[in-house]
Each structure stands twice: as C-alpha cells, then as structure tokens.
Amino acid sequence: MAGRLKQILFKPFHQFFQLQTSSGILLLVATFIALFWANSPWRESYDWLWQLPVGLEVGSWRLVHSLHFWINDALMAVFFFVVGLEIKRELWVGELSSSKKAVLPFMAALGGMLFPALLYLSILGVQPAAAQSSYLSGWGIPTVTDIAFALGVLALLGERVPLGLKVFLTALAIIDDLGAIVLIALFYSPGLQWQALGSVLLILGMLYALNRLQIRSALPYALLGLALWWAILQSGLHTTLAGVVLAFAIPARSHLNPVDFYQRGMATLKRFQAADPDPQPVLMLTNQEHQASVQELELMCEAVQSPLQQLEHSLHPWVSYGILPLFALANAGVQMPSGGLGEALLHPIGLGVLAGLFLGKPLGIFALSWLAVRLKLAELPEGVNWPLIAGAGILGGIGFTMSLFIADLAFSLPLYVNNAKTGVLLASACAGLVGSLVLWKLLPATTEAEH
Image (cartoon, rainbow, N blue to C red; front, side, top):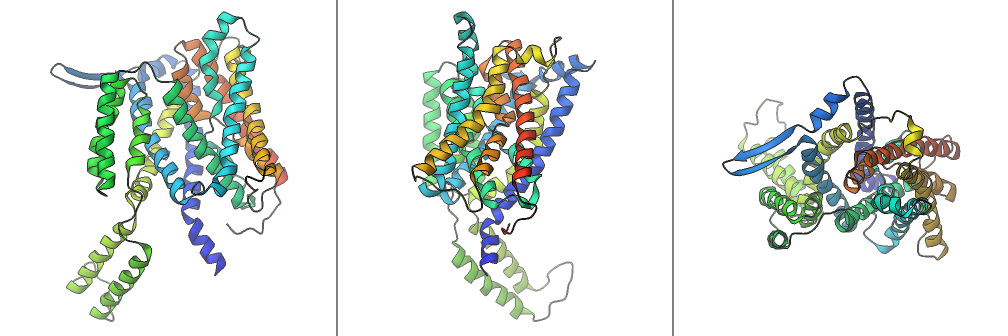
C-alpha cells in the first residue's frame, strides 16, 4: 500500500523527469548540427538564416525583426512561461512548498550562482583595467544550470539513481532558473522607458483581477500575455520576463477538489453502468444516459485540474521538443577560431566561463549544501550522501541553454559572444562527462529504493 501511495505521489515528478531526459537528447542533436553547420563550407547560410527579417507590417505600423530575435525574444518567452509555471507549482505543492524542503536546494542553488560569478570575476582581476570593464558583464553566464541536459545525463544512470538525488537536482535547477530570471531582469535589460512601464503595470493589474476572479479560460490570459510581451518590449525590460510574470498570474487552484471528484465520479460511473449492465462495444454510444455520463466525466476531469496544470501539461512537449532544440540550433553554432579551441579558452571570457561552470558550480553547490546541513537548517535526502551531492554538483555545471542565452545578452561584440559560448559548450561537455563518470562509480549496481 505504501509503495502504491508513493508511486501515485511521485508520478508527476517522474513524468517531468522523463520529458526533460528525452528533451536533453534532442538538444544534444541540435547542438551538433549547429556546430557542424557553423563550421562547414555552408557557414554563410547559417548566419543568413538567423538574420532573415521576419514580421508584420500593416500600414505605418511595422514589427519586423530577425529570425534570431523571434526565437530568443518571443519563443523563449514561452519557455520562460513554462519555467514560471514549474516554479509556481513547486512553490505550491512541490519541493519548494515548505522551508524544510526548500532550504537544501535553495542553498545549493545560491552557492552554485555565487561561486561561479566570483571565480569569473577573480580571473578578470588579473587583466588590465580597460579589459576588465569590457569583459565584466559576462559574470552571469556561468551562474546557471541547464535542467534538461543535467537531468538527461542523470537519467543515463538509470534506476541506480536514488529518487532523493533526482528531486534534489531538479529543485536546484528550478531555483537556479528563478535566479537567472532575476539576474536578467536586474542586470541584462537595457534602459527603461517609464511610459511603457505604466502599460506593463496596467496589464499586470488586469491579470491579477483575472486570477482573483478565478477565470479559468486560457484565452483572456493569452490575449493579455501578448499585450504584456509587447509592453515589456517597449519598456526596455527583456521580453522573456513577460512569460514568467504571466505564469504567476495563472490560477493554481482546481475548481473541483479530489474528494468531490472521486465521489461524483463514482456516482456517475454507477449511473453509466445502471443504464445498461452489459453495454456492447460500438463506434458510438447510442444510450443517452451513457452519453450524459461520459460528458459529465469529461467536465469533472477538466474541473479537477487547475489551469496551471493543464497549461504546463499541454505546453511542455512543445517547449521541450520544439522551442529548445530550435534555440540550440540558432545559438550553439559557434565558429571555431583559426587558432583552435585554445585561442578562445585562453581569452579571459572563455576561461572565466569555463572555470565558473566546471569548477565554481560544483564547489558552490557542495559548499553551501554542507553549510546548510552543518547549521541544521536542512538534511540530506533519503539515500543520498555527500559524494552523491558532489557528483550532482558537477552536473550542475552543465550551463548550455540559459548560459548561451545570457551570453547573447551580456556582449554585443561577436568575438566576445563566441568566446563565451565556446567556454559554455566545453564546460557543459566536461561537466556532463565527469559528473556521469563520478556518479557511475559512486552508485551501487542496483538500488533497493523504489522509483
């Protein structure tokens, strides 16, 4: 019975974990295609494609940007919307719903952001003052973890991985995403336009009103979400923030509680059975009582799910299998310098990003996790020891999606962007390889833990 209850409680987490796993594989394929394309004889077509102007023009009104803009500023807003839904779900009912659950991954994520930034800045400290100022904005690049790749690598180890370690790394990465959102809002948005910010606040008020009125239809939220995206674009804030803000406006409460759903559902099924004790399998239900019962069950199934759950469930596959691979294809095409990898990695930006992700991330995650447990603010998950925390910390050094995204925001000079992305790709590859090998050696051949 206990095992069955545990399986039910953790089913949503397992589904989320498996989706992120397969998404990581697709991301890897898209990355290899982008790298090959950008360094092939057809590299000019790669650059041409992403700079292709795309948009709308109606009379004097014009909204035309490059394809790269629409991917990074529009489609990635949808990605951040799903991230926002995940964060809100975790805050309501998940691993962040209580201080006892949240302290360990929160401290780990905090260390995993502070240490890489400090390591990056310390590497810049040995550079001339003029160079330091031009490289400084890259400090945020090594501070974030790619949840899809990190969980994808962890999944390669199979059922040997304790559930507690999977939950720890997932919660860490989600908090890390929240930190990245704050970082983008505070440090990587251009100058603000106060008039447009007034429109943003007005739309936020309307979204709040929809939430308080428990409006469950997705259409009004979608329309206001588009208006919010446009207002934020005009305000000077980064447009991906529209996705996060919109996510927190989506109602998280269901219209029908689980107990009522069960009782009403059983009553409806009994009416279905009583209408015809032995219904024949036909293409259409001809019994009106059967039709009414099925329709009532459909309505109840919708009512027991919150709008947040429904949107997350429907959008997650589109983000995982569409938006993120497309982002990787458009952003991972780093052209190798004539001097090879060494030329990019010996540059302070490339070296700082590499060191921040591959060294700073594991050190920060382990150090502040240890501090939290030492101060009795948190305890290790069941079946997890300190060597496993260290192995998970190494996987935290897989930056990829978010790091590549911030690299484009941090620098405008193509050479700097290229060096930063080279550092991200190499650090992520090293972190994935070393982390998986460390965990492979640490984990037992079999595990008694139920998954």
